[in-house]
Amino acid sequence: MIFPYNLYRFLSNPRDYLEGLQKKYGDPFPLSFPGAKTIKLTGKSDLARSIFTAPPDSFVPSEKNPVGPLLGKEGLIMIGGKNHLSTRKDFMAHFSKSHLLQFAPVIEEVFKEIEGEKEDEGILSLQSFSFKATLKIILRFLFPHLEQRDYIEAEKLTETFLKSYSASFLFIPQWVPMTWNVFNQKKLALDERFYEYYLSGLETGAKGPLYDLGEMSKTKVLDHIRTFIVAGHETSATSLTWTLFYLLKDPFLKNRAVEQLALFKSSLDYYQILDDPFLDAVFSEGLRINPPVPFVTRKIQNRSFKWGQDTVDVDEEIGVCLSLLHRQPDLWKDPDVFRPDRFLENKYSPFEFAPFGGGTRRCLGAELSSIEIKLLTAFFLHSFECELVELKMPISEVLQITIGPKKPIMVQFKKRK
Ligand code: HEM
Image (cartoon, rainbow, N blue to C red; front, side, top):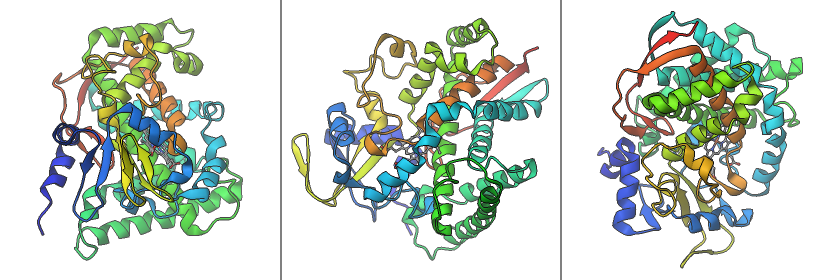
């Protein structure tokens, strides 16, 4: 079996590959992989606007979502129509800022747990810190009632489940050994145990997005659980890694952030951290320059779709390429430069800056990730004096589901007294 060359190029350097397609074909441009429908993508904000503001019944989710096998068919990302809107509404309250603020102490506990495992000084990898923290956070968010030993088990099950999958599997037939069968075993192991966690949560009156949806089939419960874990873990981890990398790379920005934290009445004051305009700008700039999700797609249904000069037929797929949208030269001056101040000087519309996608499909966990990334960044800078071991810009590749640095980014740290 020959591994398709264009898929290889996309997986190993997605940003350049997508930029190359736009240069070659103009905008919108076609993205195609073997066995999957060609998707027309845009990096322009007027075309992004027309997707994000279209009536919800214009689209259903794309046919071949690279993370589909991880999620299952009944989780929020894979469902469409009225079912999608009503399920989303049921979850909404748990993802609002006011509700999530109650969760801030859990994020701090997670940080302290990881910090406590570290010596007074040494070397750490930004990825391993970020992936560890965001996994612990999403598990505590979904299953707030578990004991410490259950969390340790849940972390292991999730890590082996995620590691057993790669987006390239979509192009590998189901019968190829050592791919799908390993994945299916790990999925089964995770499902069995996670369903028990869910049932114990119901029994003990746990609070969280899974627990006030009324009666649900086992498949639906598990698809929701896997959807939140997959959507909420690697995305936040990658984005936290990039944010810390860019801050540590630039001594001026790092000192500005550390000094800003020192001004707060208590450096771990959640409200001050979350409301700080500079930290907010740092968070946004991290997501602008390296959006973890490279593009969002939609399949047209019910009637053909007027898209700029084009009319796109029912069943065709279109989408927004976020990495190109965030680098449109007429919108973003010096797009390759990490400059948080641009967000203090200008306001960008949701069709110009859209790391969480848009419209009725916009990321449900945007607020959760904003809170966790800002708090973890602040706790990290407050607790560790650190420097990057290597200043070189890391190469990005497609990780499990997001675009992130290929090699570990190592940091020399010393705990602050
Ligand atoms: C920096 C972190 C994150 C980024 C960059 C991100 C990005 C995205 C993007 C681009 C989409 C698709 C939106 C569209 O199609 O228009 C999405 C959907 C989604 N995300 Fe996130 N996400 C992040 C964190 C999270 C977290 C922490 C959760 C929480 C569990 C989460 C849950 C979801 C869900 C459930 C959807 C599907 C929404 C729907 O179809 O209605 N995400 N995310």
